[in-house]
Amino acid sequence: MPLIVTGTIGIDTVHTPSGSAERVLGGSCAYFAAAASHLTPVRVVGAVGGDWPADHRHRLESFRGIDLRGLELRPNSTTFAWGGRYFDNMNRRETLFTHLGVLEEPPPNVPAAFSDSQFVFLANTHPGVQLNLLQKFPHRRLAVADTMDLWINIAREDLLRLFKELHGVVLNDEEAMQLTERRNAISAARAILDLGPTFVVVKKGEHGAVLVHRDGNATIPAFPADEKHVVDPTGAGDSFAGGMMGHLAAKAATDFRSIQTALAWGTVMASFTIESFSMDRLHRLDQMQIDKRMADFRAASRVG
Image 1 (tube, helix red, strand yellow):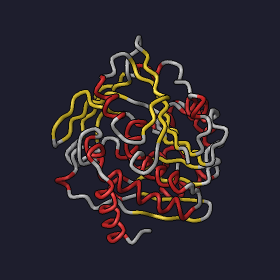
Image 2 (spheres, rainbow, N blue to C red):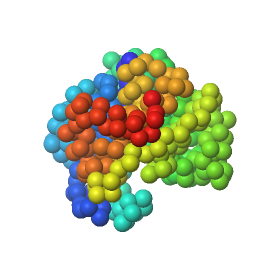
Image 3 (cartoon, rainbow, N blue to C red):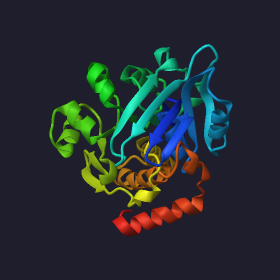
Image 4 (cartoon, helix red, strand yellow):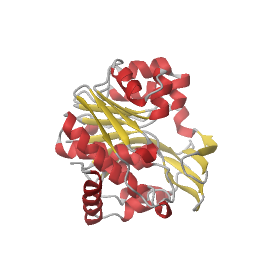
């Protein structure tokens, strides 16, 4: 089934205990698409400025199954850019700079050829923009969105309107508790169900993720990665969403059990992302490596 993602495509500068990467390909939309493309074809809707490096486009084009017809190049604008530094345990980071660039402009247009998309993921951006883009997909069977603490703080009403139109929400445990003022991730997720969605996925970093669905609950551990293999956590959450949605679109499935299994695919794809800066590890992946890691993960966690 056609899968589409909307969100940011950016230029990242990242510093971690393992090293640094300057002006590399980043953004929620890019990480999602790179991960999802290993499981199913994925359409991209986004915008970049005239300063977007040509090699970044070549990198995205080199992923088999990524359709960039919805990527707008705005020559007189600048690309979204972010810089951050991770601390020793990689669970904490500080933002060094954020340049919004094209994000301060009207959202990109959705090509007419993309309007039949049935599996829709709205990667992190302003919820008003997400809601506007969502209306462009009248045939949607599964619409899921990511969000962050910034929008909870400054665009809460837009976020609540968006939730009423969604099937699923993906966010981390701190954001879930911030939004609902609950102290427990499960209680927070159940409160979010009251806002409209059918299911909520609460990401808990190295502690895995929780699925709270109207048909039941499930938990999944993180992939047991050796510390020496963790190079850069940037984009791990977006890759998780890409793996999850990529599996669901490939199976044309929206039921509770399928979503539970999809969390495993999201976890596996995220485990590759953290092994390099930017999308380098995702770019080097082949199907044999993915299948091997999924088999290892199933054996370790006993998930379907």
